[in-house]
Length: 147
Image (cartoon, rainbow, N blue to C red; front, side, top):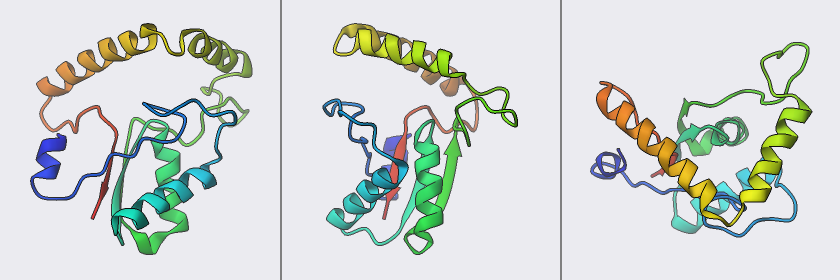
């Protein structure tokens, strides 16, 4: 999918600080801090407007960026994302504090080990295979496409 996008547009992948290959952060950045990072990347590469593809956790960040900086947003595409992650009376399918604590504990125990990468690679391979067999699917990798 990225090669296809790159054949007719400029593609920039945004690796949020504290995720991917970057070092772990002491504090989790707010969405406002994250959109400041996106704006800084856009400024650094000379991109005035962007079409955002928000995947998973990147969805809320992309939504906030589009709402805060509409003049810099040409399109907003959301895939496998959410409006709210945590449980509330009006959002009963969200995760409870205990569920989130257990997830974060597993991540903390496995941080820096192959376990996270191995699980992610296995899941990605499965998703990529399924997407490859489904007509019209957009793929499974998060992308920030800037022009």
